[in-house]
Image (cartoon, rainbow, N blue to C red; front, side, top):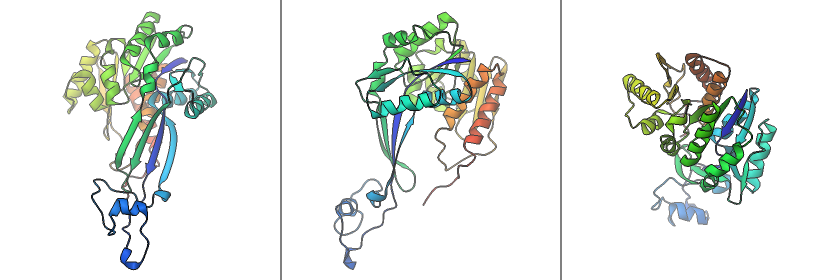
Length: 323
């Protein structure tokens, strides 16, 4: 199947800090500058409002290319689909690495835009407990993917069977893409991928064939509270009233709700992870859902396939916290 994927590319810089251990100046050991900043001259915690790192020279730093659409495009290509990715990267090392990685994965990047702005970067620092201490993100490059630029990208590539977008795109760009796809009769699926993406997606509901938000994202897109099965059903009815045929709502630790007309239900996971890193599982589910529809699966079968894919993705994850 021919699939167009629209969305963002982001470099994630993650710093995992080591366990702090207070220096003991009374034992004659020299106190380094970073120890003074973390603990004060007396070797005790000073006025720190967050947990400091141990030895910064031993912190783990990883850089990974990510993004919902980015991951979905690679996953769909690995499943044998003819995938074209349409997004924007910077004319920098990260942007070039992203294009090379997509190309090596079998994704067509010939319509990608290259900007003078920096490729989107998210920086995260996690303390020795694994909790997020702080984060910074620069996604301003996404504003370069204007409606006019999107239309230029799509000028000769609307022969696709299915299209997918994440919520990193500007709302006006999502609308422009949706209008063209609707005119061509191409099914359009959407995963907001964040609360910000949900806010943008809420302005474009009429263009989506199917959506895959999380519970909080679905609340933002519908304006409804979703805390029970009845409220989940009510949200699905709301989305259907906007012309969305297929609704999936992922429930953290609780499975996937699916709804299409009279067909609805919730697929529960066999294993619930309480204290584990489950990043990436949502993108695996989304790619599996799009793949299932490309193969003509029913909405229930698609949801079951998505849950199975998530379980496989998380099969080696250890459910624990480090103390």
